[in-house]
Amino acid sequence: MEKASGRLTKEQLRCVEKPDVLYRCILEQHVVISGETCEDGIPNNLKIYLDELNLGPAKRREIQETVQRELNTYGRTYFCTKYNSASIEWEWSGDAPEFLEVSSDEPTIDSNATVPEAQEITIDSIVHISEGQVQVYRNAIVHMGARILCEGELRFENCEIHYNESAGADEIKVEKTGSLSMQCCTVVCHGCDTHPFIDASMSSAVVTFTKCKFINCCYYVRAQSSLFKTCRIIKPGSGFLRPSFPHGSGLFDTCQIGLGDLPSSIAGIKYDPIFEETGIELLKCHIQGVYSESAVPNLIEAETLSIKHCGFENINAGIIFYDLKAERSTFIECVPVAGSFLCTGMGGGKIEDCRFDECSHILHKGGEKKLEIRACQFNKCWNHIVMANCGSNISVTSCDFNDWHANMNVLHKESFFETQKNRRSDSMLNLSRTASKKDFPNIISMCTFRNADCMSCYLVRSSIIGKPCGIVTEVSDCNFINCTTARADMNLFNTFDHYYAKPFNKRREVKVINILQGCRGLDCTKQRMYASDNDSAVSLLTMVGGEPIGAPLEASEDTAIGANLSETTKML
Image: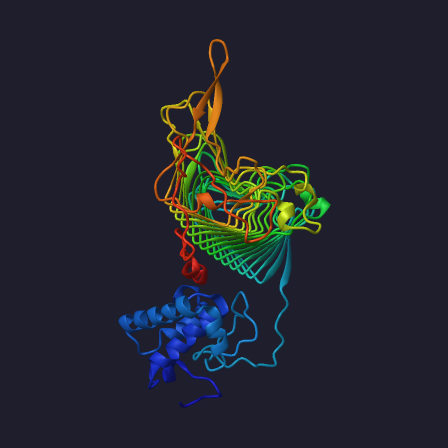
């Protein structure tokens, strides 16, 4: 390749012998830096040179698809190793690679020239951006001390923004005709004010934040539609995302969110949810917390919540929703201070291809709306996985439950979360049915229960609220392997429950569970007081005629019925 001053000019780019190789190299470098394969995220000062390469749209798409396949198969680490990248940065440095010239039409920039420092701006009086006007703050440190009224377009690029530094009314108000975007900015909050810093509830335009970092931000934004793309949100406080009425939406795409205790000057006294909106979608996000014994606000409250390809770790705040769709996500050491981690209230939804490791008090549900839990893994969890004590209509299919314990102290013999030690033991699945004709039976099918230690609790507890319209729970085609109980009756399920009939409050016993054909290993349950693997098997449940319910597991049986998420886990 010819070189001019060590860099290729635009004219030389057009004459490159193998433009496809150079184009792929640039795309792969873009994957190392940003994790993306499309051209959209590449800075304009580099993208203009891609346009000079002698490549047609079809060939470009083919290369993009090839790189995307390799990214899906081998992950981002493959490209980092390929280019010997010692570290992965969140954003482009702003300079083109050394083999590209900054501009072929302008004089060469002296590499020893002094780079001007970012200018410092203090907004201490009202700024009005009229309709049709564009206001851009670029490479600036902005101290917000007054209100910005935006009826036009407002952009922040590569800025450092400080708000709530004083008691003044520092706010960005986006009107109906206005729009707001931030790119490669750092936003720092210095105090707690329950009025949102950005109020775009009147504007229908999407408020976008791209490759931004937020530090200690509370009561940050209210908008009809907001988008956070490749952002880092560090120690967010109450009201980071506030709801827009009558409805709004928030999308977090490829974001990192780190929870933690806020400084006392910022934490405030209110405990509004950190993220609250009518509709919230989390896509390829990683959310990590630092466990605190103190009360914390709920992490998310939304009517509709979508979680896809996300990772949650060490979260002790609750997530409240009416309708949930969670798929291909992992939850590790998620233990709420109080209540349950996922709380649907009277709603429902679907949880599919997810993994829960060392979690407790996972899901609370009530009402008649159906909730499906399918092809999920629950590993070393304790206390209740599902608590549905006011009607449930839950379907649990093709799931693995491994090494569950009714009491956390069995799993964690050393000092653990002190507040959790006082929470009583509970059954794994607590299901119920009301007297409503709209309430349907709960279904447990094609699941595997391994090494469950029920102590004095039931593995599955079924209860009734009033006189039910039918059976509460149906269990079919499930495997029970090495399950133990400390109950004298050796039952993993309660067969009956009772209600009080009017008008004399007479106690009525009702059968609440049906063990259907295809269940295996129910006659091999062991007494918990004996720890040896050679304990003799004891018959668990018997029918009226004295025959055992379910088929015993054969000695050679080692194939589990239910979900095998090994491939899913690799994808995550």
